[in-house]
Image 1: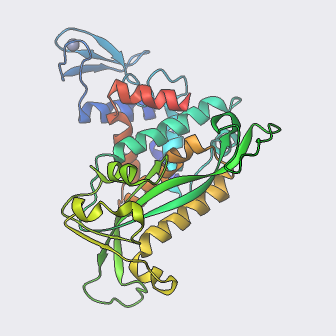
Image 2: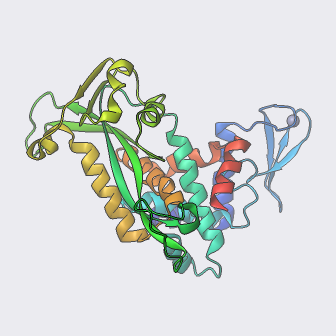
Image 3: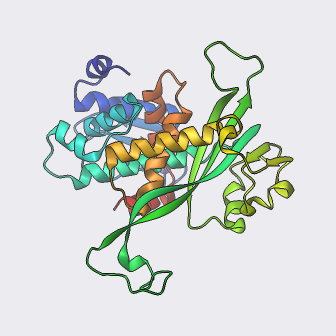
Length: 324
Ligand SMILES: [Zn+2]
């Protein structure tokens, strides 16, 4: 959405609230008491939904991403708009500066809740067809007390700074179909579909098998660089092509995983600078959601729909816990 369109469509807090309420009515609200799905909506001083069966009342924010949030609807909507309007990311500090808000923490929590919710929304997607799989290492910070006291050489770690740099492992999966005809202007011989990025504690065989399970369709053809931890892939997938790839051939055989790894690293490095390893998954969620919605025209409605569909309290609790 263009900035002018956004300002015209959502000039006030009330307009954002009404839009969110109507979106919720359209997508369906479930009463937490009786399970009834039909509700009245009253937009008085305290706008709320009322269950037609038992009369249970809930606020417009209840059981959505905004549950119990004290930030206004417009602040949330501006966050949605900024996240969807740029190809790059948007930092919480920048949003705080733009809105002139006093406190950083609520904005940071808002952005992180959105990122967790984007990840939950992307979980439903299953990759199929030709899929490239590779591992990547992201430079992140980790708290010192999370590490063993001695490093791998048996030396004691210094306790001067609470954080130190580490490499966080990520499994990257990307659909890439071969182009039927070589198109003019296309340098690559393949075209990319959807993407998935998952932070993993290690890249052992069992971990990779768990990651792939439920995320990639078993009938797909998997391409990889043939590492030892992919040994079970020929048994899991219909077809598996894994050979050690010479450096010159990298751009032809596994082009898209490497492009996505490079772009996501650049995004994190340029906008968020140093990130903690526990939050890496959230930044990747944002990158992956934007990548998978790159061809969607009305991306703002897409994000607003995703945000009010996060109704599962368990998932929300998880989001709140992570973002707290
Ligand atoms: Zn009810």
